[in-house]
Length: 128
Length: 301
Image (cartoon, rainbow over all chains, first blue to last red; front, side, top):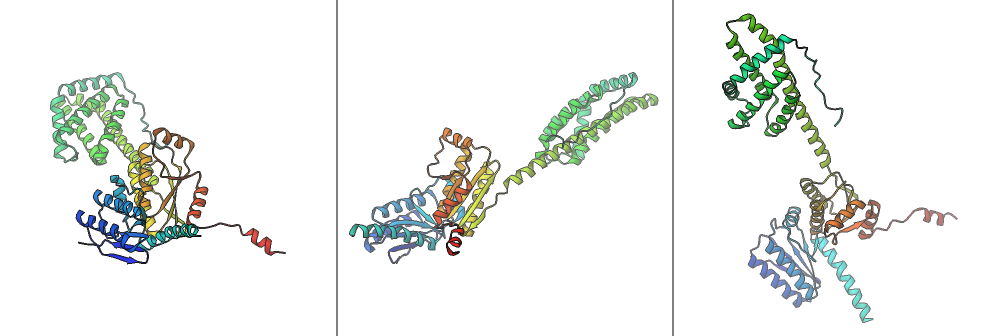
């Protein structure tokens, strides 16, 4: 099952609706990393609200995705991790180091707005 | 808990020479028939469907120990050893779900089994039997009371202990401002409590849509590597829900312990006390607390 990627202003939003296979996850990662360049996006939001299980592969793929998009100029934020999933992840030692997380889509957008605005200001200063 | 334990006050038994002699005699008889009487007792325990939580082997092993202690108490008239044993036994069998009626039941069964044996031995001499029972019955009753009371006391101790544990477990997650929660932790954190705490916190973050949580551990007396790692995990789990955790109230001792064990608290946001923690949280949330007095003073003239 492929995950639809929506473009919204400067951001790409991928909302995972059902459990994904490892291949689907890789596909999602590759598609997002590619589209960040195509649309010159500044941020990526991956919504995992519908996932009630996250295994080590999924966590690693999401972490890699975040690091890859950052290298291509976009901040990634994972939103909607369920409390049980968060608890299980920490119990299993699955860490999303260096990856931003937010409660839900709204919070994720607010987070990206604050990050991107700051980045924008730096650019203005540089241009000025 | 000193003072709360009810002690069984037994009137010291005045034993005259003949009673001691009789008791010695009957104990010798009971020792002689140890194997047979013990088996008889174990059989009656099984028949009465007592101690069903234990296996027949266990019942028999306990029966042997109780039997020997029982005879000793009969012989010496001292119930101290039996008291200790009864407490010890209760400690072992209470977690197995053994009920008070079962314990009282088995002790009374032993009393009956031994009495029957005495009847059988002295049936021809009623006067002697009378004397023997005069000596036997008070001693046996005292033993029965000792064992039962010991069991009940032990049970009460377990209940008190559990109540304390429950009290310690209640950890409230309180909203202080929009998107700001505080979590004051009082008492020892063990792995089970740490788990419950994390679950409660995550639920609280979700429900209150919190962005910042101030976790105050002033009331935590001690911390070791396990607990510290639980804290790190809790902080990490909260972060996955998009909330920042500020830990406050680390005592000098705890700080020293953590540095000595080498727990990586680098990712943890720590502030000295709860007040500082809340101020830091307000800063993160973009609040600015300003005194009202200044404005009124400026507006007054």
